[in-house]
Length: 440
Image (cartoon, rainbow, N blue to C red):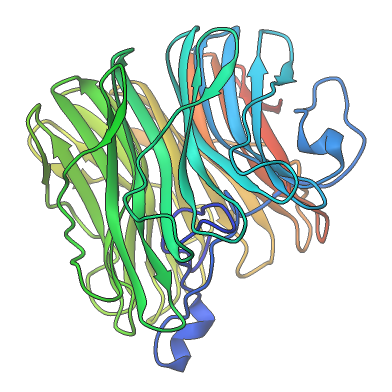
């Protein structure tokens, strides 16, 4: 998690990654993002309760998003790799076990690069999954899949950045208020860091029941070389009230990234100014990765606040909308708050204003071990809840949760990736039973 500016994207379709080690060279180095989340889990024999997919294929795999319409109907999405390609991974929970489901692979299955980041449903027979894909070394394209109750179909999507090498289109989240009204968010732009630099814009697509189209949005990061605006999450409390969150700023030598929050008020998207706990000086970045809304007067957004220059610490970040303004919440940091501490949140879900789960990871810098992180809001207090770490707790072991969804206070799923030491990334799925988290 440390050093990442934007949430991870497909290997060929990512736009930027800033690494801490590059700061001493007169500015951050830019490199392609890795696919999906950052970590994975050890290769081994699957048991009857294990998540299928990559583990069964004997390759690497990861889960990025999860959504449930009921306790017996959940979808998890991500990707897995073969010897020559990265393929979409879609798993279906039907009450007793997870099943792998066949889906389109728009980049192909021979050498293509396919990746799904998020999934959202309005009913058991209507779901959307979004991500990106890349084939033949060309730029990445938006990927949108639609579940109609029997099978998944690929749906045409805009390509605002274009389709040439270096043109990047990526979708990372989706939200719907009805079968005929959905929003998908992400970013688009150019990835030419070796010559002229990068330029990244917010991407918001709207589904009207028939087609997906590009919607106008502010781009507070600007429109010059190495300016960036990128959205990571979207949620709606009604068709007339939606929020989108992410980050914006400069990714050049004097980079600064601020929390980005946009509000849809039935007519247009407008920027809302929010706190930036990491500050706004060079070397600081603030990023919101996900949000959840229970009403027009209550939303929670999560992410990370990091200072790469002064002391390298990364802290959990939670902002709450109270109907009038966004305020920073007090939140635990299980890896501490000192130099080289590493805490970050990626997913959140709220059943009520006083009952939320936020997930992510902590550790990795000081001990070379990364742990699953799950925070629970009960009333007004966030607390750390013990979770399994299927990837292990030794040197080089990594565990991370990227999304969470609950159907009831005693039934939640959290998904992500994990790996043991030098083994490949593998799926990570945890189940909340009301008293503890168990491996799925």
